[in-house]
Amino acid sequence: MKKVLIVTLVLGAMTAHSQKLTLGNQEFELKNVTGSIIEFQGEKVLKIERDLKAIPFDEARLEATVDEPTFARLANLDFEDGTIEVKMYSQLQDPMPQDYKHAQGFIGVAFRVGENEKAYESIYLRPKVGRSDNQMFRNHTVQYYAYPDYKFETLRKAHPGKYEASAPVNIHEWITMRIEVNGKKAELFVNDARYSTFVVDSMLSTSTHGGIGLYVDMGTVGYFKDLKITPKEKYEAGDMPQLRRIFQPPHIVNKIPYGANESAGKYAQSGDAKIYYEVYGSGQPVVVLHGGGFGSTIEMADFIGHLKPNYQVIAISTRGHGKSEMGDGPITYEQKANDVMTVVNAVTKEPAIVLGFSDGAYTGYKLASMYPERVKKLIAIGAGEQVPGLRKVVLDTKEAYALDSAYWKQQLALMPEPERWQEYWTTMAHFYNTMTASKALFNSIKCPVLLVSGELDRNAPLPTIINAYNMIPNCQLSIVPNTGHVVFLENFPAVWASIAPFLKE
Image (tube, rainbow, N blue to C red; front, side, top):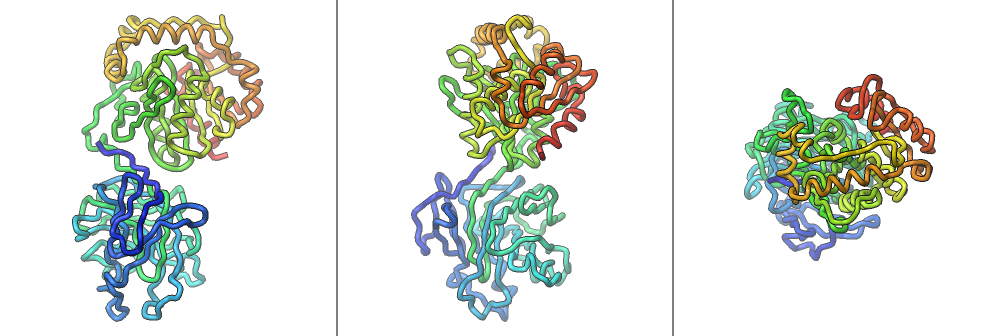
């Protein structure tokens, strides 16, 4: 299965004349460029320049000597569709040779690079003209070409203006470039913009899959870091298994098996248990935590689908659920919070937004209390004040199986230790019946909190929600009328209408 690749540029031994650069367990192969790993603005980055000895430049024969395969190519990667994201910084060469004073400042990405670089697609920027006072120059900031038959000079003559655009970028600054590739279409997003800057609606190369190269051309010194490649999930080709949530109506189809998606799944060792998680998208990290007992990652499908276009979603199957191990110790929310933090630390160093439902929301409360520097915001759904005696939880696996056997067949197939299902549920029921989430916990939460509840929630009755709201120092409240505990499955649009603005505050 294809995996999400997070390629971090790290220190590797290399000279300007080497042909390869080792980056962790990845390699960049230098194709008509010279390169090195340098310390730049406090970070290790990849620096490359076009090798004029490999491909000389001739201003009198511009078409023949630019838009060539001049890039550092990531080895052992076959990319077809998906997302390519990289941060890049450009300078003009100094001194600048006079022979190409009119052709300078080219930096970007080549993709679907075929065998021996015989064909590929490329989108690049010319940051020098991105904020020019001359609008005509600005219109040439973004450019596309398809090697070898459709270099840019050819495209400009045949289709004036179609394969170029403006973008508010400049040299001497970091630029985030994200290209989303789907079939014959490619879209460019610059600096985390919500909407694309440039669209190629019908790409022209004969190569439909291949490598990815970090590209520079004439007069440019290029610096690259934080390259991320997310192949398109194979479920869209119809070759991944279907997965369903508990009590899911037959007319609902989950195209992505969240919680069992091998193309996005990983494990983190947390104490005595391996915790399974999946990562989607890029941007500000958002941790998604499902409910307990009957809960699973797939029940959070709508949240993951709405978040991943603009955020990095970290969807965790909590201990004893799905593909995560149960461990052997007693269940506590300290343990659950530490499991989540282990996963978050494996994925990102940034503070995360946490979105949790029911058991996942209580875990979120504890996480925000224990690790205030790592939780930026918390969205808690269906989790109010809880003290022993308020409710009686009984978890019986035979009764559960009879309620929805198709769901539990799938879950048992995922569990590393299905024979321990009733044992773990007995432990979990005891924990739920003796747990406390009240003033001491809620008063300790300092990050902004959005508390969402269904008006008719019987697991977390409305008075307990109001109590929690009054105890959390920085809390907003959203009550969705005529809905129960799993409020987001009953009225997702109303829940999302509350969450979306909170995410952006």
